Length: 323
View (cartoon, rainbow, N blue to C red):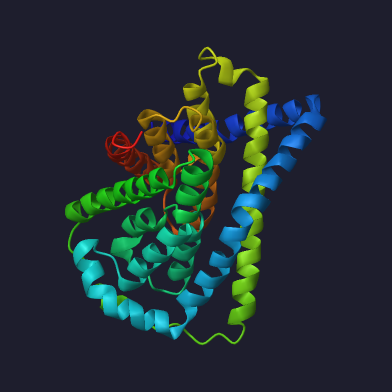
C-alpha cells in the first residue's frame, strides 16, 4: 500500500516536467517555423527594455544595492522599526525596502528583498508578508509611462499609482491582522559587515539583474507574437479589451498599451490590476529573486492576484471621477 502511494506521488511529480518538456518543444517548433518574424519580436522586446526599463531600473538597482549595505540604512531601519512593526509587523529594514521599491518599481523590490535576506535583515515571521509588500511598481512607470504617455493624463497616472499602492498595502494589512504577533523587529536587525568590494559587487549585481530583466521582456514579447500567430488574441471576436487583458497577463506594458486606446474607467482599472499583478513576465523576474530567499511561488502569486483585485476596485471608483 505504501509503495503504491509513493509511486503515485512520483508520477504526479513527473507531470509538470513532462508538460514543460512538450511546451518547450512547441515553442521551439513555432520559432523555427518563422524565425524572421520571431527574431523581430525579440528585437522589439529589447528595444522596449532599452527605452523604457534600462534607464530607470539600472540606476535604482545599483543605488538600492549600495543603500541597503551601508551602515546608515541600518541606523534608519532601527529608527523606523517600531512604527513598521505596529503597522505591517515588518522590520525597519523591510519598511525601508518598501519605500525604496514604491519609488523605483519592478523588479527593484524583489532584488532588495533578496539583498536584505542575504544580509540577515529579514526575520522568519515577516518573510512572506514583506515579499508581498516590497514587490510594487512605481511613479516612473505608472505616472510617466501608463498615465502620461499611454492614457495622455498625468492625473490618471497618479490615480493608478495611488490605487496600485493601496491595493498592495491593504492586503498586507489584512495579513498583518491575521498573523501572530512577532518578536520585536528591531531586535533581529544586525549591522552589515564591512565589504571592501561593495561598489564592484553592487555594480555587478545591478548589471546582471538588468540584463536578466531584458531577457525576460524579450522572451515574453516573442511568446506574445507566437500567441498572436496561433490566433489566441482573436478568440474573443477581436475585442481590444480582451486582447489587452490577454497581452497584459503575459507582459503588462503591451497590455496597458492596448487598453489605453479605450480610455474608460474599466480599462484604467484593468490596467491598474494588470500592473499590480505584474503579468507573467514580471512574476518570473520576481520569483527568480524571491525563490532564492525561500518564498513559495503559488502563495505569492495568489497574494499578487488578491492585491490586483483590490487595486482594480479602488482604481475603478477613483477613475470614474476623471474619465
